[in-house]
Length: 358
Image (tube, rainbow, N blue to C red; front, side, top):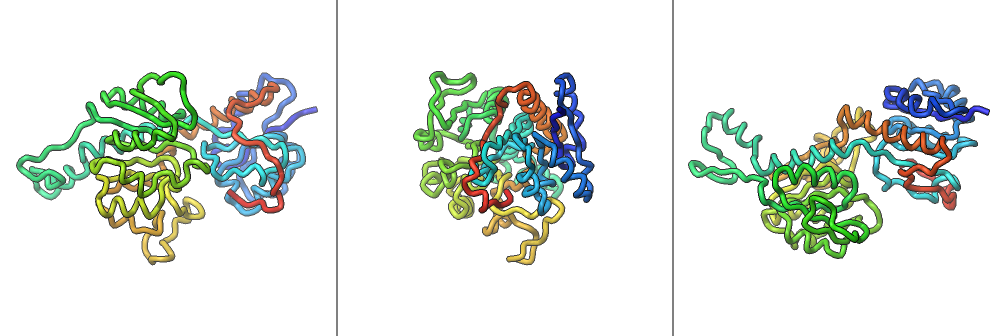
């Protein structure tokens, strides 16, 4: 009997061939790719037979699709083409359903972190604006004629979370001769290459106190939600610069805005937010302000010491493909009878009646 893998979403349509290539030498498996149209009958036919499925974000954000996927009678495994698991409550998932996340974007996110750090240190935007305005000497934080910008050599970078993304950041930061330290969910017997030291979350105060740059790369969970609060900002150097590529809720929203507005720290680069438009195509003006969409109830847009990006650190052409390469590995492991290495949750079905969209 043929066993089926269903691929849903626009990115799945583009990279479904990677899934096919990953299992084409394993007998008894077939990959079905949805053409991403409004043919719900074709969708439902695929759902009746699929044992594993890949759900693109555009697919699950379309009303009805995610609930239909969860009701698929033979579904055993779902793969998501992103890493975050903060939406996952095993109780909302059918009992026994396995969920895998995806890698493949660590390099892109690490480059985003380093670009944010370099922009803060060298201030290319400010220098460019001055030149456009006919000013040879900088009008930035150091006044002409003694204008100077910073550099990364010898600076300390603290990483909150030490997974694939953080490791990729450390490799790049070491190339700039930065000193790196980290805190992680669990204790490590040995200090990983590239780090001066690593500790658990209990040593977060030390990291905040020592670091010139602080990069948040951790998961959002019960332990990390609100971890960076007013007390945490009080431990940072007044010259510290914060980069968040984790999740907005890792930082207490009001505490972040206050720290930046009152310049308790030097600045921040924020790629993750507290509010999101329904879809990328539907970035409507902010209903509370009648102006451009904003990712927070606070007016970060009005601050001059913050770099704002629309959760784009992982969205590169190479990262898109890399995520599906990662998923292909997980599906191959499953097709060979193994538990996928990137398994992040298994449904319990305890609150299935309270199911909601991620």
